Image (cartoon, rainbow, N blue to C red):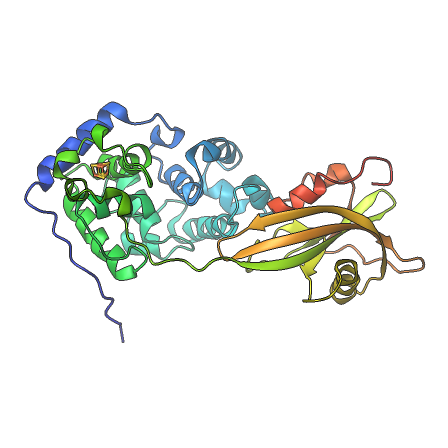
Length: 370
Ligand code: SF4
């Protein structure tokens, strides 16, 4: 049985046409020249939208350009090995985005002959394509009147229409999608959705909205009430949970040991120095021994502390201490395989590592035995 999903209703008010027209006019004059705005190729739009989630425009631009050189078409991405895909994504974070994009590209090739679908349901069924990404592809690439409502757009709509429901609630998001759909002028979906996003990025910014420069200020209810900076309303997120981690850089004959994380879950499929959680109360070097025994069945001599790395995820904070180690005398070494390699410093560069482990790699000592 299909469950009815609650949604709230928001009224676009009597001036929605003028408001939309003013926004479009402002966008035509002030739009930034971004690489993904020079194309209507749905695959290119898709890549840009996935990269832009939780990531700044300036960071994304070089990644986007390199990605399209490497994987210029859906087919090129679909046939690439996962290691290559993750390497191209290295440093952008939230790696499930890359794995999902890769998987979805394979679905597009298998089911649609490599053409990104222009039907909402078909798009939304692809791995990792949520309502925002589907709306962005449909509107920007195909000019279909679908809303593309992300955090930026919710902030703008909360302020313009004085919406005081929490944007953390799905019912509010769905209500805002309906509202945004009703604001799209006929035939103008591509530019209108981008204009809303651009307003959120340049003018209606999170902490200090530039209302004096805003093209829609005269219709903005939050501005009129003087509460713009207090919107949107968000339900407080839980603070990330701190976790103590140890990692070991194990050297042997000029090589270091790296292992591959399970393909599902946090940083899935990336390579790292063997690492694990420090059990509470266990001294750090002792935790290194325990972790290596448990993960690899390997006894080591810990030579010393290499570096500390703190890495913040949305739900976790890693407080990671890395140690240099060598296999204990007489130990048989773990054998290379799918998820385990002994690599030189140079070879290490070809593997996609999480940012925390890239920082450890930067501390690898120089010299023939490093
Ligand atoms: Fe945002 Fe101010 Fe414009 Fe309202 S007037 S949409 S608060 S920038």
